[in-house]
Image (spheres, rainbow, N blue to C red):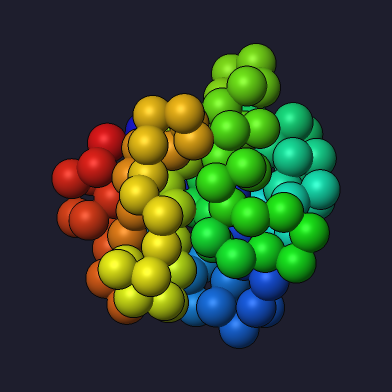
Length: 116
């Protein structure tokens, strides 16, 4: 069974690259979103099993979005992503609803599965 994915990032180029990478590695990207409001709507409509969420979005930060997504019925597993150095970011605590963090340059099926 393929895992369905929502990719949330405000950079269209990254979303495109992430989609290609994930689909080659056996995931099925069912939706993309450029901001938090769109991400919640896409998650409600498509019910992905996994949401990759950029920490820095234009309308809400990824930590808050992870908590919102975790509160949905049939909530996806949320993995935070960023191109920023992990030392610059807040720790991913249990109150965020996220399973963990992966730097964008390390995004792969292997790193995702290590968190899940």
